[in-house]
Image 1 (cartoon, rainbow, N blue to C red):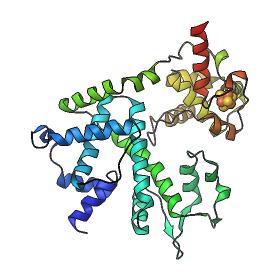
Image 2: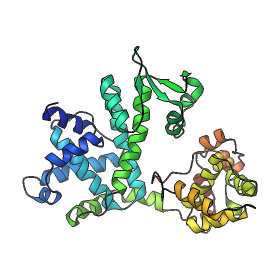
Image 3: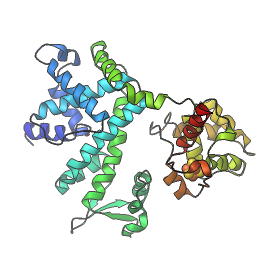
Length: 333
Ligand code: SF4
């Protein structure tokens, strides 16, 4: 492949392993982007990061080289904000951008991305893709739309049949995790980049205030939503994986640290501290995939079978909204 084609590829899919190798060859040292003739790339990266936080992205651009470099500089700017929520929104928008590009991609290219993301995909003669049942379940469980239920797909000999659009969507789900990891793994951000990060934090103050406005740490178990109370009541009998997952992510989100969560599980008669710690740390992203999962939505919890709504559940779509509702009521009382 010619270098111009490689740069084109990296501009489209900067998170791909192939692109990372290329970047090492073509990029300058980060500090050089403060020089007068390169500083405009930092401004462009800032614009990319800022727009991504408003869920905006572009799929047409003039200069492939600039497109690649602004992605990497934007990662640094985002990392400097030091806010997990911001990392997630940025990763999500960039994954959507990749999805739009992948849908238009030739089969061999989408296959290359899928394989580099760790999927073992095979192609049928009629152009359909096949993915192992296990891999499909692993990645599609994060997708709540009903058409991602396994019964909507042809399954044969442990393989799930997918069209190009399906495969692109699964890839984008994985891409979101890859980009999030890229941000989290940046060990430190140079001082001159931090000035962009601080500006971004200021520009998005309203967005950040929205997530910081509520402190749930003073909310006792009696105020928990019915689904969570139901899980708490059943800890003693052991919980299913979705049950444990929902409870751990919820408790963590409202301010419980790892030890607090492990203490909650001490109510289990055959409590095994080592195993519980292992499971909790995995769910909180401290071990294994290092992905910090979010609390599932009400729709998801309903599909797990432990949604038992009460009057405060009206018009809410997320268990945290239940607590916000109570908080708001408390303020008005
Ligand atoms: S509506 Fe939501 S918050 Fe209420 S019980 Fe169901 S899942 Fe929980």
